[in-house]
Image 1: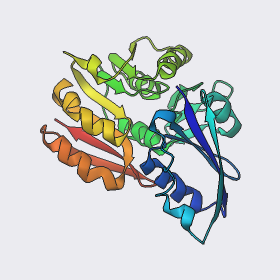
Image 2: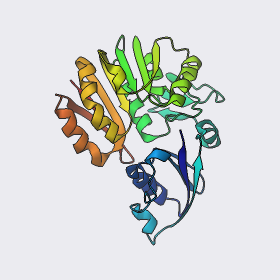
Image 3: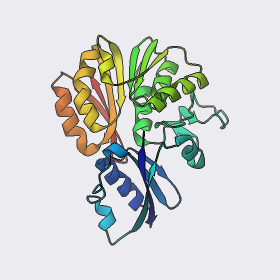
Image 4: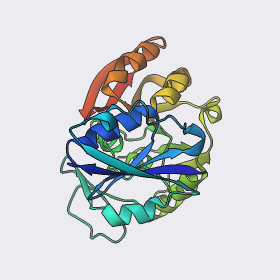
Length: 275
């Protein structure tokens, strides 16, 4: 998969970088790596348009000085980028998310993630919030789907929390392969991994479905997720902004999904629905 990267130099860095990331996310950029000078933003080449930065309003602002360098790259080495910027993550003083080269902490839950070419380390707001949502649920003996699994982090945490059967699915082959590596690092035995999309969900049933993808894919696939939920099942959605909630909720309500809770973090949101 070919990516286009934009390396932005931002002065002053805050709050401009946060605003820039939010606007780029709306434009279709899917991954971001912050550094001392600003941020590197990545978008798949097939999603990239020559005019993609035309609607990024902060680039026209007189309050900030923002420059960028554009580059085409055959594959983003998330592991290399991650190790340059990564510190262990703690979620609600209960969960530690760390690399293999970090020492184990005394947190209740310990997750080891080596992302290689995949996205989903816990640093991004959506992954962080999904971990928070999972902390509120009783997963003992549940059947779980992690849709768009990335590194496999949410599937791994589901097994740690007691789920008895987990499917982890991602359309990206790098994510598919990377998930196997992270399952081994965490000694997981109850997770099946598949390379594909929602078309794999024929005749599948789950107590919990986790989908941390993006707004448009979620809007397209919510009907499939609803059909795959067992009675009183739970659907966790993230990968979009607070402003997108009405669109998501309108679609979810068509399938008798009830919005139970919202977590917000830097304008990103994670929604919990029940059937």
